[in-house]
Length: 393
Image 1 (cartoon, rainbow, N blue to C red):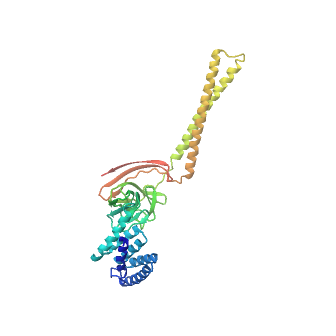
Image 2 (cartoon, rainbow, N blue to C red):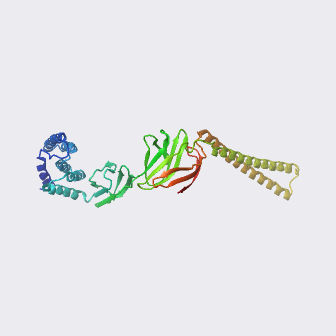
Image 3 (tube, rainbow, N blue to C red):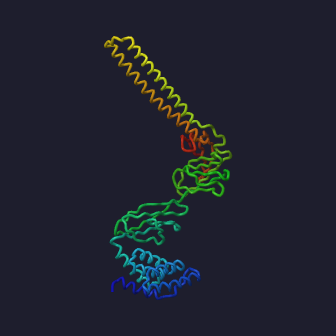
């Protein structure tokens, strides 16, 4: 008898046990799981493996007993679903296998290893956060995270509350046994004090919610821009450098930074600059016209022909006329483009361009205050530029 059928034969002894051991599940779940277990045994004996698998999966979900998981492993072996069988034996061990049955479980695992070791790699992942959600190749990967992949790479995504998410491609090769430990960095917490409820909070230019029920943000390490806006007025605009797990408080002062919006400057600069460039183009047009007049005069005064010197003068006037005309066309093009851009900017701008000077506003969790003087010239739809000076005390 092959090792496979020897394992199946031994596991069949487990199938004959119809009364599951009481675990942590309540009595109703235990009873319902026991009924499903009996139905699964009947289906298994009738060679209806697919139905047996479904029933044992439901039984294990109701009452996590090692027997249900191991019976699943045996059924998966029958269908040569080696990875599913391996995962089921992992769950059986996690549920607690009696010492006298450990050998049976290990024999099943040995059968899986012999089947997969040449074409797959065994991957084991330890995540420090106990409440992490892990996806392996876009499918949930629950604990214990010990399974097999076809390789040579696999995608892992890890997310845990209060921590920075992680996503990476794991190079596992073929026929390898690899383990990896992941420690997620804790998110920093930003508390916002003051400010009117309903104010919109932006982080790095993206709206994340409204003040009111939300008074704290979780941010990863690095530099972030936090902006609070209420009815078109910017109440706070601060640049933070966060450390992993740090705690920071931002104070929104009454009146904010944008209580008195000023007229936007940049689009008018474009319109005015474009007009000035076009005016310079007019000067070159005038010079080109003067050169043309000189050419006409030279021809009219020398109808009998040009001397050698007059030929050179004629050629020079043509070059100067053409050069000035070319420059004037370029000036008209650039000036016209600037004027059109300025007009479009004015049409799109909803008054969000501001020129502000922010005084002291903010106390950080380390007890140090920030004083920021920031100048902003631009618009809410992304134009313009900004500059800021910051110091701490």
